[in-house]
Length: 401
Ligand code: AMP
Image (tube, rainbow, N blue to C red; front, side):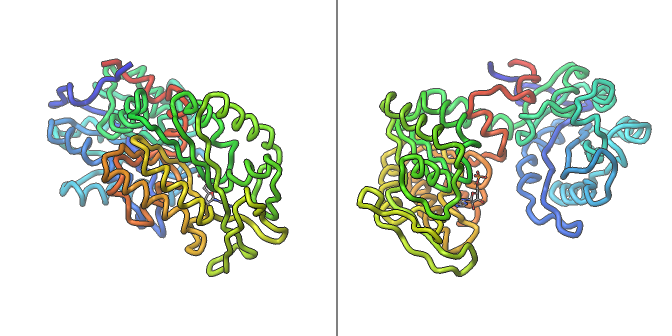
């Protein structure tokens, strides 16, 4: 069901409570990456320009249910102020007398940030009274915090029961457009690239996308689990020993459905898991290649890179979640970089390419290819849950269009 968009609302002179995801990385009180703040700016500007009395709320980090200076949203208020070129005030708490007074004093086009919602345990407990206080006298609620939309917390779900109108912001709208609508009837061939640490984290996504995908590419430590399940020797590679049956079930299912399921033909291996470590590539598995004891697979091999890149070039819709190897270490990043480049190339040739959150986003940014993808999700857990076909509580709670 399509959700109400802020495009269709009049904000003039109205108090608007907007949930943002300002959970930014901080070092000694300084924001080290402001992507999440920048991502919310188009919606914030739209509301400010529309004359809203704008109240922002967010969580930051994992405080233990009480105030902690290191998790204060103060740096985000200052940073947003400098982006907007106007004062952005910070309320000392997200609820209570002072916050209420500051909200009431807001003029049209002014912006206030409430202090970290997770300074109250009631936030994650989705406590009704707390949600009611947080809602205050807001007339419209806007949710642009896609990254937390899979959580039914007071600021993402509870407040909607106490505010007459609840709508999605531009960021939320784009996330839903690419991770839901675009994948409803994807242009074919539809390729799913999965990598990362564990099969168990991605099993539900793989199962859900198996219904629509023409092909899967599997990389990362996940691939070791599949190869081990097939009976190959994986040496000291990271493997989920209790997921071998599951891996075989997935392979059987893909076969039964006629979905091509590509595992890396060969593997880049090392004896030392560290920066600057020497690596080798195994012979292809089909030709007897295996990972010897004392060695571990840390990336896909060169034949795999070639085969996977060819597959990427054929696809018209691509969704990618999880790196092909340990991309954080330069010597182990070749496979992830090659696939990122192949996906970027596919975008230029007209494919819809979606980077579905988490570490693949970090990788694509690291390689400077972020502006070469059709869409990069800002959610990790939230994008996975959407791809699993689940309804996100923070989305379900919004008004229908
Ligand atoms: P995920 O969060 O599940 O997407 O997993 C991402 C993590 O998996 C990254 O930190 C990678 O370094 C790690 N990873 C990818 N491939 C391997 C591998 N072959 N062995 C160990 N870790 C890996």
